[in-house]
Image 1 (cartoon, helix red, strand yellow):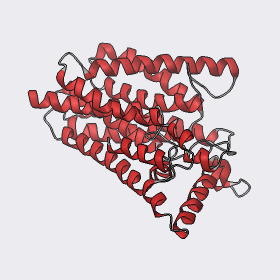
Image 2 (cartoon, rainbow, N blue to C red; image 1 turned 45 degrees about the vertical axis):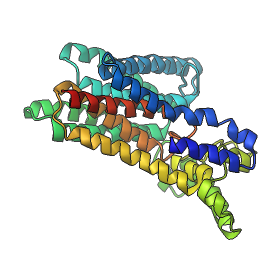
Image 3 (cartoon, rainbow, N blue to C red; image 1 turned 90 degrees about the horizontal axis):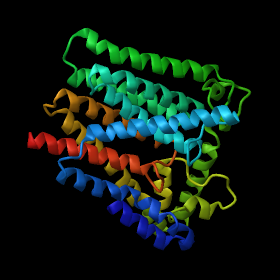
Image 4 (cartoon, helix red, strand yellow; image 1 turned 60 degrees about the vertical axis):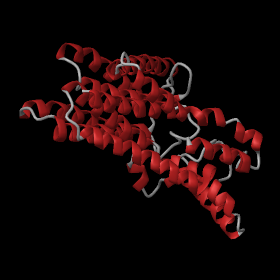
Length: 340
């Protein structure tokens, strides 16, 4: 709620209020976490497991569309209603939720979920979006390590299976990245003497330098209110209308530029409270089903957090709806623990 109010204030402080106001509805998407949490809490028929199934099915449908569009056009995979980045963001969330669901269901359901997961990961690769690759890999590693450490107290064989699957996925993506002939994807191009670093950063270094210049200008001209409350929603478009980039390409830079220092503090607090709630749930005595679900939320949360360093995830983007679902799911699991 405070983050949304911060957005309202940034609209009022924006030099182009009309342009800034256009982002306010999307900025309000994160408020759905309040609605979801309330519904999940009072409605005992709501099942986090069912929500995970819906997310898994939706990811498979969107991933299938992305693969089909890639084969049809030869371009980066895009989804049913949006471009390649939106698909990559969705599939990073849905694939990690699907992996958590595998840990939570009986063996006879695992094959179908594996099939969905294979489609989603293939589609993620075909989006050629590095932040999605990193989010997927780090989310898997974090989730599996925590799951085996905290929950999986069974024999060594049961611990080994998720580790092997994660190892295969991570190694396959890493090797593929180093063998692809694309300066934006291949990490080797970053260290190559004959390549411009901006190729690998896709122009992000320039964007961050421009953001730093604006902040220095505001400081030197004693425009403290802009440092505190920001330059308004859609500040990238209002300050650089000719740029091909419509955002600051990082949740943290985006928040600082749009909402100021107050908004950045609020964003960091949201992440802190989310992971703190996860930690509290991890310490609880959970049934095996809920263990896998918590691991899935942890994976998706880490993936979301990683992607947010390289793009706008939380602020003014549709992907904030995924985070709202994760928040409500954690609150639902905590409610169920208290009831039981």
